[in-house]
Length: 313
Image 1 (cartoon, rainbow, N blue to C red):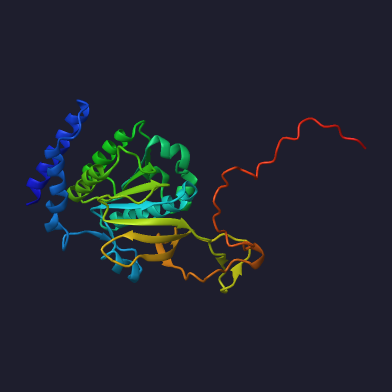
Image 2: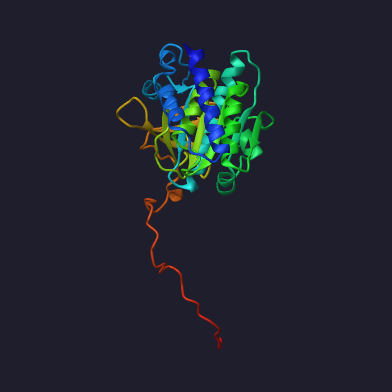
């Protein structure tokens, strides 16, 4: 049943490519075939054959029906570009867990591929080798690509997933670009199904939109805890493991799930964090709530130029 569906998907992709080369809109028939394929093409593989990556926390795994799909598209987004570190860190943590899982299953040490379109790479920055190592990843097993066009990034992501070489492929985009819509996400999700390899979509500073992602997370930064000492006390002024605030926005679970997760790079696993836990030293805590304030329209915060003046004793 799966082979005819893959054949039809390739035919749809070929028609779409020809239409783009000719500068014509996608034929309605091909679009309809792609939509029907996404809805019914792989229904027989959604139950027992679905591969999952367990987070290791029962509440989250139950909401994810066993964990993050190892053969599907998962989206992680941020509202603000300054929160790109939270979404990137969470996806890298998942990639590290998948990499370790491949090692335990005897597949050896395989590299992780990060694909970023030019705009996202310029504004959100690129992964840092030293930081990757501290995060639990080996820089020599981390590949980074920055195609000039978003269309090339989508093609590379599709080819990387289809190869089945990478334990995890990460595609980073900025906002909600027009060339990457429901049709493109559907094709990527179908490709992950046929190859049995996951694809993580990083949408930096993007809004919610229709996509074929099985799950969508909203990632936000959270205050890290002080580093614990062997006797149980906290080392004042220290910085502990990174903590992510995650909200499950898209899933079969009708109730949204919001949790705090701490990433341990040494063990390469997550630990739950109580929302009320704030073990920072009191003098290091913020004096305000940190609520975001809207930008002023007339910019009264900017001082007027004083011009030349003469100072007298």
